[in-house]
Image 1 (spheres, helix red, strand yellow):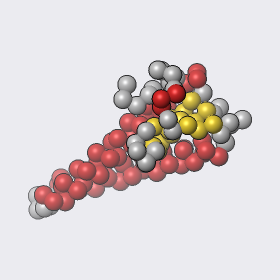
Image 2 (tube, rainbow, N blue to C red):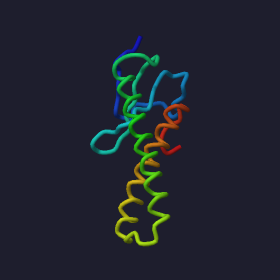
Image 3 (cartoon, helix red, strand yellow):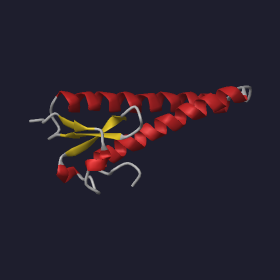
Length: 110
C-alpha cells in the first residue's frame, strides 16, 4: 500500500536515502530545483506516474541517441544543430542518471 507522503523539501530528509527507507526519488523537482521524494512500498498512483515519466525520459534519451548517431554520420550538419542536440542529450543524460539513482536508492549529487 502506498502512502501519499510525497515531499519536495530535502531539508527534512536523512543524510542517506536507501531502498530500505521506503523513500523514492521522483523523476521531477520543485520549480526551484529541489528533489521530490515519495514514501512508498512501490505501488499506488504516484509511483505508477513516476514509472511512466521515467519510461518517457529513457525513451526520449534513446530517440536522441539515434538522432545523434545519424547527425554524426552526416558531415553537412550545421553546428547550430549539433549545439541544440548536445543540450537535449545533456538533459536526457541527467534524466537517465536520476532514474538510475532513484532505482539504486541514492540521493542526487552524492
